[in-house]
Image 1 (spheres, rainbow, N blue to C red):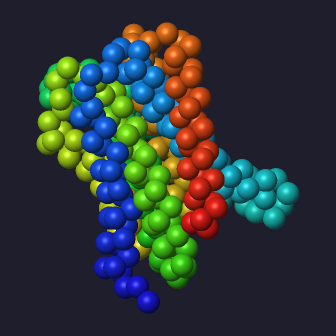
Image 2: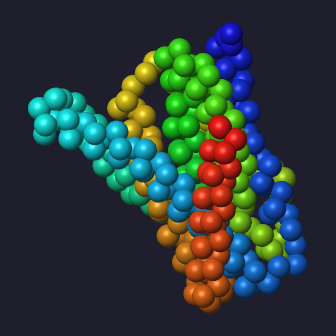
Amino acid sequence: MLNLVQMVLLGAVAGFTIFIGLPVALVRGLNSKQRGFLNALSIGILVFIVVEILHSSWETVSSSITAALKGTGSYGTALTLALPMFGGLALGLLGLSRYENIYMNKFQEIPASPFRIATMIALGIGAHNFSEGLAIGQSYASGALSLALILVVGFGVHNATEGFGIVAPLTGEKHRPPLTFLAKVGVIGGGPTFIGTIVGSMFFSTFTYVLFLSLAGGALIYVIMIMYVAGKKQATNDVLMLGVFCGLVLGFLADLGVSILGI
């Protein structure tokens, strides 16, 4: 039987598989259209992730509301789940916008726009991965060790593709991104899985789970909008839509693979 330390270490493995996709940023010689396509491919992958996590969050909230309306649940419970659902969405959308306007523009720590976009993507994915870590930890806390292990493997597979999503705006850039920057966004994006596993193993809270799923969804929606605006400057709309389509297909295929493998 796994102890808590072993479960936390597995949570770290699930999060830091994100580093597998980061070396894509080091590819050189791509023209504007190719960069636009890769940017749109990343958008498609992120759209799939948004739909997946918001569906999970809303399923919990809608079930609670339906139960209250049928008289089998309380309106208080429904309200305490609806508030983090929509509050998280608002915080994810407006919070990142505020962060970019004040922090990113004020301090100008990352001067090139593609680097800022990559950082914003990492922040959005990090919020999402925190909720994944919570799921791993809370599965362990509830005694469902087999489920916790399944989540570790499944989230690890998805996080490997998320690494590409973070650095897609950097592919083909004139200046090769420094390894320290790749390490930074990797930690921002993957580290929260590790932290979430620790936090989630300490308690179980549906409120917290819904909050961070919706927060991640709002953050990723904001990031997708930024990436689309950047992509419009790189390629035609036809190329962008093709990239989005391919990204969605990759998302579905990855999910199908996880289902087939039983993870």
